[in-house]
Image (cartoon, rainbow, N blue to C red; front, side):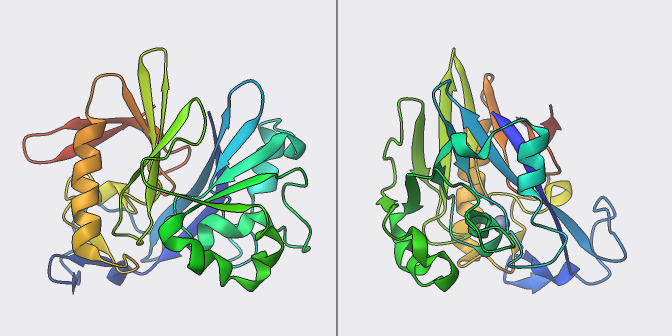
Length: 250
Ligand SMILES: [Zn+2]
């Protein structure tokens, strides 16, 4: 697997939500680094090479959001991944920093040989409403929770951040990798305090429950995680602390 950095996005502190949808004020724990007073979230996508073809999990934002994102083509070039080898793309969910990389800033296709596009079934309607991605409707196929996408990749539902939010699991030679999308937005805080949610969670309570479930699942010995908003490259292991969890980057 290769981690691809699409860029980053700076977000106001109020996006972080304590239980009860309460924002932080002056009481933001000092462990959270700020950049000009903002939270900085890396935006990552992940390419899985099974020897035959590349499957890309998420695609970054292209030019659909802040100009600090949209660097996926450069990341692919740097990783020496030919865009024509990317024939399958799967989305963890359909928020714009995950799907718009299908189309480059100049309007051309990001992956000219794309043949299959996996979209969580619960968000298939949301995906079809994105006019800019109209041209992919014929290649888009909804997938269900627990559906296997290939011999190496299976899926499980982790709703909350969005209704169809999905984690992808790869198992190889006794090791497991969870590509977990938006389970964590602010790694400096949410491993230590998994109860902290995000303003853009469609359902904060459910997102919290999914986060706790996946963090617990990830603490296994031979398990690695890859997160869309963990600091690039965003790959590492999760361990338990006395009260919560800790992330150990690779
Ligand atoms: Zn995201």
